[in-house]
Image 1 (tube, rainbow, N blue to C red):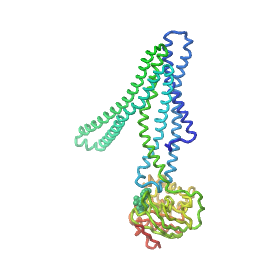
Image 2: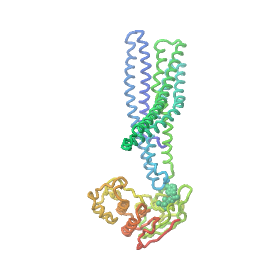
Image 3: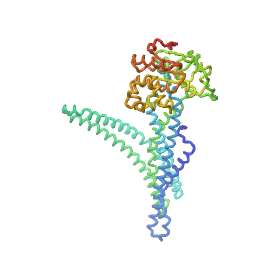
Image 4: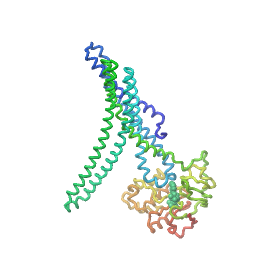
Length: 536
Ligand SMILES: Nc1ncnc2c1ncn2[C@@H]1O[C@H](COP(=O)(O)OP(=O)(O)O)[C@@H](O)[C@H]1O
Ligand SMILES: [Mg+2]
């Protein structure tokens, strides 16, 4: 999968983590092998000097196992988090391009929540799937090779055990585990809901003497959860037991085969005991196999997002921004997927003019706004700024001329000052106040005890709908764009507030061009000279 392939230097970190993991797992196996050799050899009471190397080796492997495991965790997590960071950066970059015009509206809602979870699968992929499986593969192969050197048949027996442990066991446990996991999460939800309800209704329950009934239903759902958890633990235990059975089988095979081949003494002990160390090494494989399914689904969704076609192509050789501000739409055709939303639309918007574009919901007003902002590319026709096709200008250049106010302008959870400074960092308070007064919000802010430092709350929750729109408009005025595209600015406002807002918007716009997209043209003040265009 392209998206999660780490770049450049992360590779050697992952390689180092793999090496450390193999060294740790290898130490565990070698520890058992050398211990087996040492104990059996020592039983014959040879001169202690012949044991020295093995004694040192046992110590080294014992210490090495812990140290290498630590290094593996450290370097592995470091690498995985770097990959995660890279992936997040790529997704953010992609979203920045896609979000304004390229995401179908029904997907926007759950997109963010899902993306956060999905992207985290990158961590699971490297830490809990790729690394453990790679470590297990390398260590198991090396162990098989070592045992095959001592007795080829024993090597073959261990190979068979490893094969079964890595294929049949995950297959057997996957199904029971998946079902158990589903049951546990639904039972947990039930208990949580029950607890909340019990707390909320406690007074009534006591008043009606219904405590016993409620407690009975509570313990029933609790018992259900306990049963589900037992089954889940049982399936995890089954996996472990099967694994131990495989490894134990390999050990018994070593016993029988070694015996038939007349191998005795220390080598015999090594043949019998070494396979047991593989239980630890292979322990992560069934879980990794299960996780791999979930990770694949998550990363597939992320990939789908990264692969969605770019809504706008930046020109290879962008032209400089022209000086004039006359806008012309010529035979514009634009749409999403197989459908055209607008076809053959032509408009003339000279600098400083007022254009009111109406049409019922779904007639393509927001789509037109997206084209004017160069968030979306026409399928045919052009939008010309002073005679230059927008397609030949960089998107950011276009947006330095055209500004947008939408029905739900985003207000950030910070102070009024910070919300304004977003449009033009570093400007003086005087300019902020000017913009606020021109958006007719100055008096309101002045009356607030904290003035410009007033926190507006999440999504501007502490402001009314009209105030929020005015704050967003003040921000747009500060940004000082020559063309203002207002997409349903009155959508969430009552008639009176909407009328007042439009009155002030047109007045404050001054010499700028105003393109108002609305399905309530009757709210436009009568004295504003305007060109009215109706989309159907
Ligand atoms: N990102 C999108 N992907 C697919 N279809 C879209 C997208 N945005 C809008 N549409 C569709 O295009 C049509 C016009 O939508 P829109 O321009 O938002 O209309 P309006 O703003 O006039 O209500 C609608 O049928 C809508 O469902
Ligand atoms: Mg719209």
